[in-house]
Image (cartoon, rainbow, N blue to C red):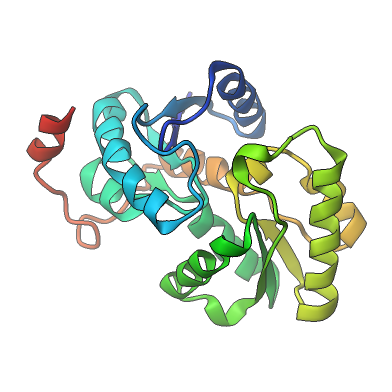
Length: 240
């Protein structure tokens, strides 16, 4: 059995939400998934580049502490927080849900749309697209106006908001596929409902990232040392 750490940057979740996501994650992939909070001192959510930057040190330290316990790590944030330094730091495969989902979207559609949580996170999404080299394949980035900590995963209003925003992305932007650019939106597990209403693929980043990590771990695939040269981790160890 492959063991996957779903590593949540920042302070992470309370016990009940961590258990809920862990249950969902284990239903989504043929692996044993553990949801791991990075650091009690980090931001409670990541909705800006400042939040993202503040989350990296704790995420690196936690990854270093658990690397021997797992076969792969999935970054538990669609911002792919600390993805490159994580790949330099640990020898096991590290998967970023945004990287995995955006590349999947580009394979299943000529043009895809990105639904993010807030207007203020739209520039962050655009920056990620350019970094991934797929900005020209994105029909547009739209906000569903849902602060991460206010998202109610049981609310039908959230699904309706994604349907309404997604419909405009399809109709006005020309998107042929969509995805929610936030792991809290993903773990609401509304993608089948939204896809049925919109009649275009509505990708689930949690499934894609976890399945990619499972496949990489099962087949011995990991990041290249030439692209991600391993670093001396003594400085990170000193922070623990």
